Length: 345
Image 1 (spheres, rainbow, N blue to C red):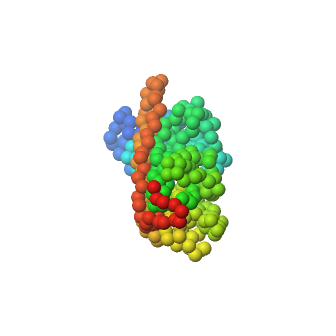
Image 2: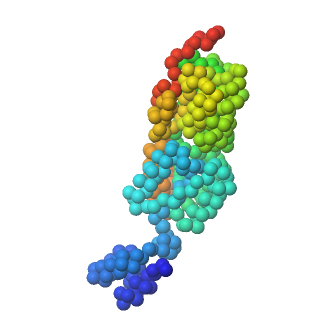
Image 3: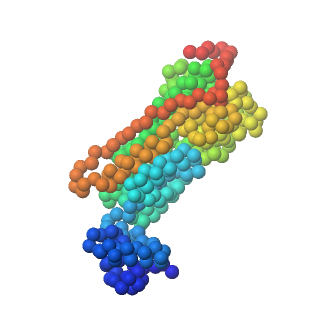
């Protein structure tokens, strides 16, 4: 049975108001009474009613974090950064997964509102701008992480997705590849659109014709990369290189290549994106684009906390922070190749 402040008050022979003031470290309670109440609270394993405290104080000291899939190691680093930063400022974090599903996103927004979180960090916006506009109308602070929407001037902390995709594709072009496929997700995701744009820019600059058939759409989870590349890897005119939207998809390509009897990079060169923790440990080690997941989470949380503490009625200028990714070259992209009829730029 949950212990209440009334039970502590009865045992301490004081009022419930005195217990509340003592537990909130108010100065109008004597040190002796405060010590007695805290000792009883510890003895009885008292757990504060966070929602009730939020109703009184206007703050739950809690942040909501909405991510697509916390089984993705990229999100693991981002989540850790959010928790580390929030904890250092005395805040807790409630995590919600959406699987990039609009209905799950709406449910996450509804649940977090019911929990009276002080603000939200959001990486999944498949449901569009409507929930974000609702947050703005309600005065709930929020920050977008590695995602954005065109029709809202929202705070966002981003990786330069187009630049990273350009570097990944340009690396493959410099190695002599001309049949470079791009394994990616649905174009409703802003980072998917940006990485596709960087891929196309590199092809254009290296004189490689863009083939829409070379863009393979799939589920962004681990199995998606494997399932989606089977047909491409077994086709007569299979790609000589693949740039994957994420390292998870790239690992799926490694598995599919092994199953159909192709070697990475001898038969198909491979580049991923994210530089997740195990990218150097797969075989062959994965060439990838390192984005600063921890920094994105840390900076986004700092901006959100700043917004939460911003004086009421004072104008707030939305912040847009963009981190530059870096290409990390390992064995999976392979050495310079020679393709009959083509020359390296």
